[in-house]
Image 1: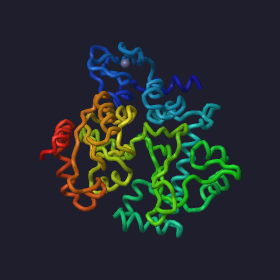
Image 2: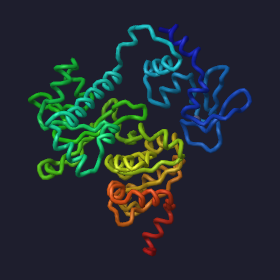
Image 3: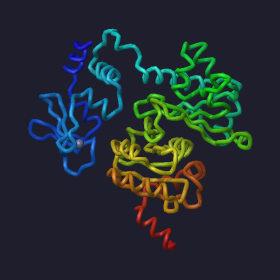
Image 4: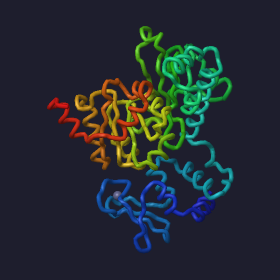
Amino acid sequence: MLQQVEEVKSKTDIVTIISQYVDLKKAGRNYKANCPFHSEKTPSFMVSPELQMYKCFGCGESGDVISFLEKYDGMEFYEALKYLAQKAGIKLEPTGFQQKGDKEKLYLLNSYAAKFYEYVLLNHKAGKIALSYLTENRGLSIDTIRSFNLGYSPDVAFALKNFLVGKKGFHEKDLENAGIVYKTERGYFDRFRGRVIFPLFDHRENVIGFAGRILPQDEDKKFAKYINTPETLLYHKSNVLYGLNLSKKEIKKQNKAIVVEGELDLISTYQIGIKNTVALKGSAFSKEQARLLGRYSKNVTLCMDSDIAGDQAAMRGINIAESEGLDVSVIELKEYKDPDDIARKNPELFKKIISKPIEIITMIYKRTLNFK
Ligand SMILES: [Zn+2]
């Protein structure tokens, strides 16, 4: 194992790997950048190609390429090793280490769950009403539905559990750890029932959790319109930017991110060709979301359902985003109620508005002084 770690490291260039995440500039024999682990204006983060190490002289973070991926990208040791081995074209020998880690097992389980839900939506009669809701009421194409791997959870107690335990050999406890079942005195029940399913991906394309929306016909019968996976080993609400797995390239290319609130806002926006968008799953930025988005672009335009100036949580979120170095602007949707609404009714107007965002402070003046 140790030998393999050394082999992978010897065939990996730390500068190339870190450059994927951080804008490194040549400085003599080394490279430098603003530190990705703390907030700073002058670069004290150094990468040495000779030593294949990084070190920050501001906050003291240091290590090799594997520890960079662990700390910066949240990978587990073996996950990082496997990622680098793949890039270097090295086949890892099977060792005890290769037994799936807890996280990897949950990634796998979630990916089966996502495929199950997707199958039900697209192919099974149980998903028929949900499919017509998405295509007819929400105007989504089958291509779009496939791009986001949308699904449907049948309205019965054990559909997913029976599939994952019965057919895929997982234990009920694994399902509970993934947050897709919950335990009662009468055993484990599927958490998502009778809901349109939005798989939640991290920026590396792993399924980390799910959001489920009820169908309009059930709005009087069920409590919450949306439910999410609870906090698990994989899913931390404050770390998730919905859609980032699909939009990160375009955000980097355009050096600009459009930020919306909900899953359907994002999907409709994406469908009309605005592909540099992420959804906060709420109206306010968390520190982690601001940091994650800042890796791809510092220019952020908010396009929210609610009146941002009147939403204290949203304003706090903007302060957080700004303190993480993001440059935040905002657009107003005129008479339209949310990005989903304008994307469907007037896509050309939407694109025009997005190209001319206004500064937050201007928006606040406009609102508080109430002049147009
Ligand atoms: Zn630092």
